[in-house]
Length: 149
Image (cartoon, rainbow, N blue to C red; front, side, top):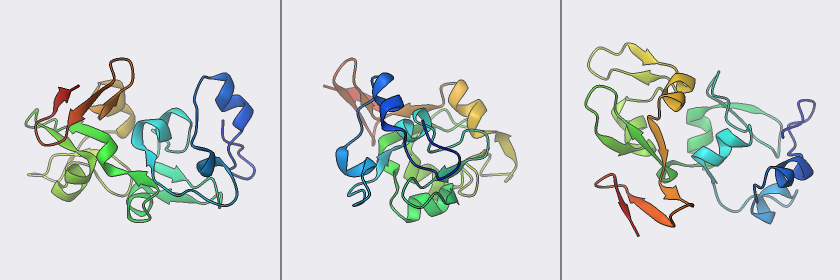
């Protein structure tokens, strides 16, 4: 999906997977809005192994914090299940609270500062949820972590 040599999106491959990118995202003129967190993972822009974001315009690999600060990733597009409390919070809140390490996406126990699990393990365990559920047309309320039509 992403060419390793230059970091560019392979649009035909993305289309064959049934993923539709906003046209402004894939073209050289630039992206006008941040990408959904889950979509960034699915198309290979955000590595689950390293937590690094591959900027498709520059080919540069960035830590999660730089991708968030640069508004390349929409922090309101994902809910994070805090492994210590079980509460659902937005990615933005998880980063601010120290639940998610801004450098690599690892899940951290905010009390001890110790790594609980990798971003990859958290994704596999279902601790990262999209705030938009396309199959039902529902959106997850960031404040309550509950689905809304």
